[in-house]
Amino acid sequence: MPLTDLTLADCWAYRPDLDVPADLDAFWARTLAADEPGPAAYEPVDTGLVQVRTFDVTVPGYGGEPVRGWLHLPANADGPLSCVVEYLGYGRGRGLPHEKLFWAAAGYAHLIMDSRGQGWSAASGSTADPHPYPAGTVPGFLTRGVTDPETCYYRRLITDAVRFARAAREHPAVDADRVAVTGISQGGGLALAVAALDPGVAAVMPDVPFLCDIRRGVQVAGRGPYGEVTEYLKLHRDRGEQVFRTLSYVDAAVLAPRATAPALFSIAMLDQVCPPSTCFVAYHRYGGEKELRVYEFNDHEGGEAAHQLEQLAWLNKLLGSGTR
Image 1: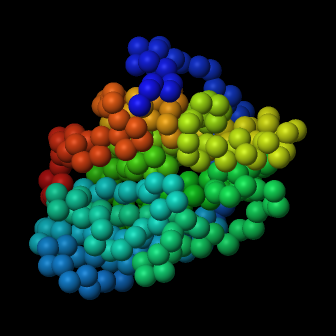
Image 2: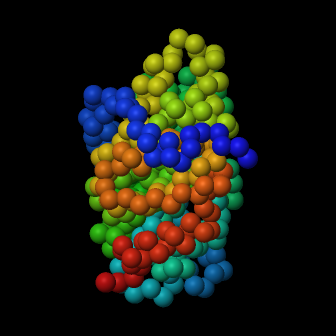
């Protein structure tokens, strides 16, 4: 597979100026304060597994709208636990309750957020996105409501993600001072955004993150969701600046300087979906202490299971899993 973006040396040097909306902080403060969501609900689920307890989760998200999820707890854990809140990749729902057990097996509480409108499995229960979007939107999520920050789909999804991090801290099995956020691709971009918008986050692990330096992503990505913007602007030739202005409000690289929690990034140098240069921009601009693992010969799969072990060692050292 050929190199499709900058070299590693050039990525280290690539530090563009991004367009930061003057009202960015006011926009997000108003968004997150727009309603007073009620408490999360947790219903036990019989998965047939004996080492992990699982709960069907409903968290009031954007506008108080119900967002589904799973909570996994180690069956015999004592005392408040560190918690990993996980956000999902593009087009993926929360799946079935037994699919993601790594963090619970390692002794952590693990809260998984469904992505509104993206779930596919009726068996798992999916989260709807009840908001209409204008005609002319191309298939996918990146251009939904993209002519105005107020209607942008990712305004809702990021708000959902912040609410899940807050819900984790409020759960009695969780140590509120030890909540980390993570995700791959779209989930990595959401984790970065949450770390920027929620000072209660204790650690962030963005893995090959999407939604970073979006304009460049649209220009150089070889495949994946950034192409939706290209297709949209082929139809709406006069809306380029309007579209990129809207997307700047949800760009994780734009938000990254506001985050202060320790971070462990991963970037894949042959990534055609989230070009490495875009991920490096978020890394360079990140406001807290940070480490990086580079997978020089991987595409968008990144480090996969090998990187999961890197995350576990890093998070164990930073937070630990059980009672302190």
